Structures are given as C-alpha cells and as structure tokens.
Length: 255
Image (cartoon, rainbow, N blue to C red; front, side, top):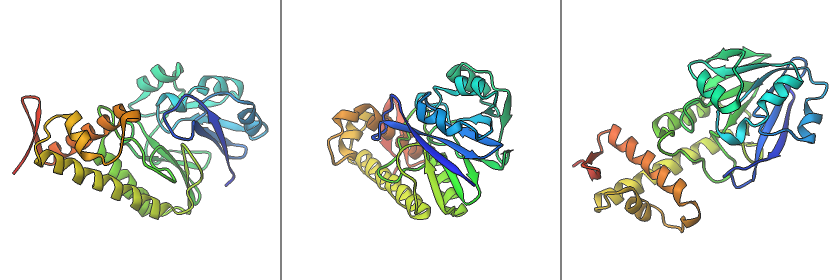
C-alpha cells in the first residue's frame, strides 16, 4: 500500500521540529495527522481520493489542519470512540464518525495504543504501522503525568513488537526499518528509568523534583518540565504496582 510521508513544520517539542503527516492508499485514501496546511501536503493529497481524515492522538502538534483538509477534500472525520469530546475540543470539528480497535478505513485498520496519550491509536496498513508517538527511530517518547500512562505505554510497545510489522511510520522523524529492535530499545529505556526512579526513592528522594535530580544522569534543565512529568508518571506506575506509596504528599518506598 502506498504511504506518503510529509514532514510538516509546527510548534512541537519533538527534536525534529516537525510532525509527519501521511497519505495512505489511493482512491480511497486516508490522511493521517495533518498537523498544518502546507504546499507539500496539498500536493500529496491531490488526486489520491482522500475519503478519511484521522489523527493518532489529539496533541496540538498533530491536528492543526484537520478542519481544512476535511472541508477541502469533502472527507469524513473520525474520532476514537469515547473520546469525541476531546477530539472536538482539540480540532474544532465534530467528528462525523467514530472508530475503535479493529475498525477499517479504506484498508487501514485501527490499533488501540494508549499510553503516550489517552486517545492514542496506531493504523496498520499491510506490512506497515503508522505508530504516531508510540515509537521513534532515535531517542525516546515522552510519557508524562497527568495524561501519560506508562503501564499502557509499555503494553502498547509490547503489542507492536508482537505484531512484527516490516516498518513503522512514526509521528516524528524517519521511517523505522527495524520495528522489533526499536520496541525492545524503548521498553528497555523505560525499565532503566524506572529502576533509577525507584532507587532514588529508596535512597530518600521523596518529591518529584528531587527524584528527577537523582534519576537523570544528564542535564535536563532545558526540558525540566518534561523530565518531571516523566518521573511523575513512573512514580504513579510504581504506586499502582505497590512498590511505592504517597504519604502526606511525599513519595515513600514500600519495603
């Protein structure tokens, strides 16, 4: 199936400075994550018979031109079932239809992959998966409190690993040619960070800023808010699993 990637420069915290929009298939085709209107994206959709406009999730750097392309292409907009209010508030568009796990749109199948965002999905197209912000070729993905759920994120990565697609088309950066190794790397990275967070708690750090200082071995001053949100999400996972607890606003280890 033909997949066309169009990097769109938008305000994003991703190191690439752009979000990847994709046009998948031909007549009918699906437009995924139109972050903004650009000449390049106009050219990509021209003549492709786009019938559906979707987003992997409703973070601001993924949906900026949903309304424009839905109107210009007379295409159907879709939101994740149960998250239509979130979609409407973000995009300014009331979705025409909803999708859920297993829904097929022009031979593109929805795969539920929450974790990075509560409404995050991926789209399977033949031997490829458009994975949004589930995976990146280099570095890692932010999974931060209050929206991020690390238990769900790790489950989504492991599910993607089991699917074993030939390639991944991520929301940011280049195509991922080694999906299983990438999923393994991202899972290992999260578990390494988890060990560092738990060690910090056991060594007496009892608040998110202090745990962050102890858990990172590099300068995170430029992304301090993201680092603390990530650590908070790790703490929430540890609390859920009974390995840490909140006690009067402080984080304590569970013996």
